[in-house]
Image (cartoon, rainbow, N blue to C red; front, side):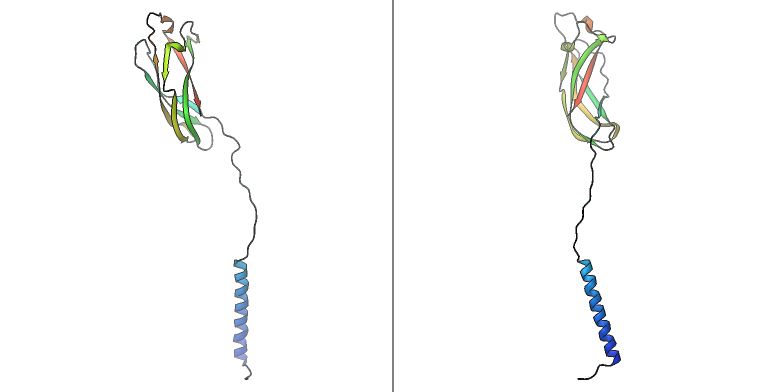
Length: 159
């Protein structure tokens, strides 16, 4: 066998060095490992407020039902899901005090549970709800004068 020349020896050393280096790089890129981390979510949300935007006025015996509509004030930093808004008659007042003979039975509230089924964005006057209707009952043979000038106080709940 012939003795390798300096040039051949240098080429072989370079080739071995490249192959060894490539093997090390391959081992680096395929190395496995593990680790941990954390992420947190908001611990609680603030309740959002139901705001009635419709104006219901001039209710009287025999009139037509008036539709209730509104929006939401969401003080949270992100959206909040609202499934339904339910309206109810909380009280009836006259000049700021409870009416004496006028009460919730003098009014009819229909469609009280209104499906919203959407996320309400953060901010004031967001989203929308509608559907419930209120009207004054005409109680035949009953003096309803105490209801003149009365205010029907509505309550809204969200679920």
